[in-house]
Amino acid sequence: MSTMNISLPDTLKSFVDEQVSQRGYGTSSEYVRELIRKDQERLQLRSLLLAGAASAPTAPADVGYFDGLRDRVRNNPKADARG
Image (cartoon, rainbow, N blue to C red; front, side, top):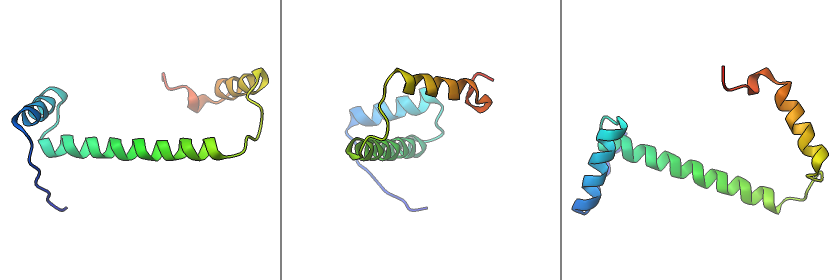
């Protein structure tokens, strides 16, 4: 693992320390790594959304389309996250 040093104003350092304490992170490095991972996920999702928006539609998103989605979810036991 590589090391990176960053400089923060006192107000940001206090904020990071508070987040580490309140949210159960072991170190400020763990907190920063989690922020970076979430930003990577956000960028990936944005890329997927933009690709989807730029692609040609394959089926109309009408009442029948959404009824079909609901049926698929109801009939898929793995989709039930409550268990």
